[in-house]
Amino acid sequence: MMNTARRIRGQASSLVIFMAMTLVTAEVLINSPVRAADAPPPGISRVQGDNSDTDKVTLNFRDMDIGALIEAVSKVTGKNFIVDPRVKARVTVISAKPMSPQKLYDVFLSILQVNGFAAVPAGAVIKIVPEINARSDAQPVNPGSSAVGDQMVTEVVHLRYVPAAPLLTVLRQIMPQQAALSVYPDSNSLVITDRAGNIDRLKKILAKVDQPAVGDVEIIRLKRASADSVVSTLKALFGASGSGATTPGAAPAAGGNNFSRVPVFAADDRTNSVLLSGDAVSRAKMRAIILNLDMPQTNYGNTRVFRLKYANAEDLVGVLKGFVSTNGAASTGATAAKEATTNPDNTRLEIAADKSLNALVVTASPSRMQTVESVIDQLDIRRKQVLVEAIIAEVSNGVTKKLGTQFLVGGGSGTVPIGISTFNGLLSSVASSAAQAGTGSVSSAIGLGLAGALGDGGNVGVGRFGQGGADFALLVSALAGNSGNNILSTPSLLTLDNQEASIVVGQNIPIVTGSYAQTGSATSPTGHAHHQPGWHRAFENRAGSLQPRQRSAKLGGIDHQQTQCDHHRAGR
Image (cartoon, rainbow, N blue to C red; front, top):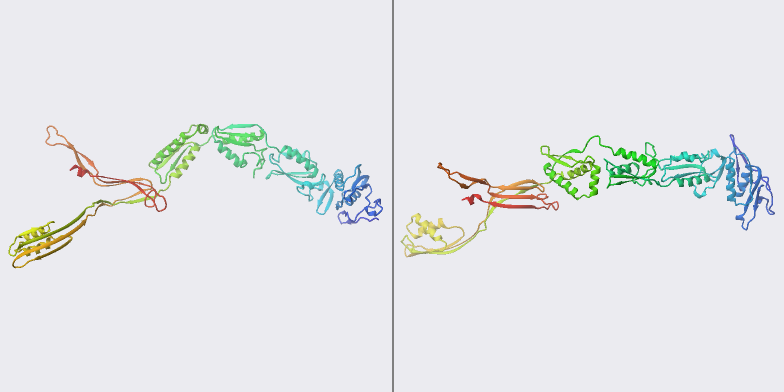
């Protein structure tokens, strides 16, 4: 049973399509007693196994047209092919051992490669095209295990340690002419288009080359710059870490200058040195960068002027000098060695205050200057103001209680009482007032005396006053009193938070301290000392809204001392 192949002719070119399910060649040998369609094409013999799935075939043909070979492979493997009209050749294959259909397809790809053709998968079909055109056709990317030896594929190979750009020249010398090789510098990757077998060989070569740098360790001692600062700059330039393996070979964004390899770099604070480990080329380039960073400053910026906004310059001088001296005393020998190395000009810390401008003039090394500037910024802040209002008063705690009973007996026509008894002297005052009034009778005297002599408190009296007989009077009085305060002064004071202030209320009074006589002089000179008596109150404010020593937004306190001196009274 024979069928002719279907041919499709176009206007510009013609393609031959071989469908595995319907196409067979005219030279099929019928060896099967059952169906002629199961017979293999000429030159291909089938070896029957225990299972039909394990049947193997052998290839033996000489000077066979490649089109007939494609038909035979399509029938055995079940693959569909589209053949470019430029695919023309005659091939010879000799095989002694049987092979599986998959192995037959691998051999078929090798035959195409020998004759300058390639099989390019394109969906459900496989295109057979000249090898030079296979690079531009659609090919699988990173096919992995699905790629066979002579199948044209494109694969992206990422390099970890070695920059990709310098490898282009080396790899192109060992790659076929029709292979394509390019570099993607942003990810340090190689894009390779070639046969799967060649790509596998290149990957093995790259695995041997792409290794961490194993080179000498170089120590670069810095004379002017700080090792920490230099290493921080290098990390910002070449990557976040100095391992040399995370971002090696990464090209700069604009310049495109690729280093051969970014070495491992680290800082040694004790000796102020930078340690490099890597190949000689990369270390030489890194060394040049480090030496350029370790250059003397063209302008000597070791002296700066800090104009203070709120703090007092003279007060800050002592604070800053004490802070630096304390840190210097507590520093270790390693830190001192680092300071000596980082400051080759032996720049000492000098701080002076300019009272007229309220400014600080600081001379220090760059590292210390940063510390001093940070401290000044934290100390030169706007402090809260505290208003203190005080009342200075003389307080007496005197309590008075009076209770008394008085009586008086006298004649009706007399002007002097016959008998009188008094405890608090009230009736005596009444009698005195009556005597001064000049009245002619006791009753009149008592009336006038009560009007002028009765004091505060409760007073109750009874008596009899008539024209004849004896007159008498009885008076009971009760008085209770409590003396109060005498306000001397109400001073106020406005001061800053945590700043000591004082209130002084008094006047300067000269006090005689001594006298001496001079010969021939009638007067004796007297020495005087001026003292300031009065009330002295010193306040030391601690932060607060109205009071110092702030513990919250509304709570605070005042530390104060109070003294009183009275030199005027003592001098009397």
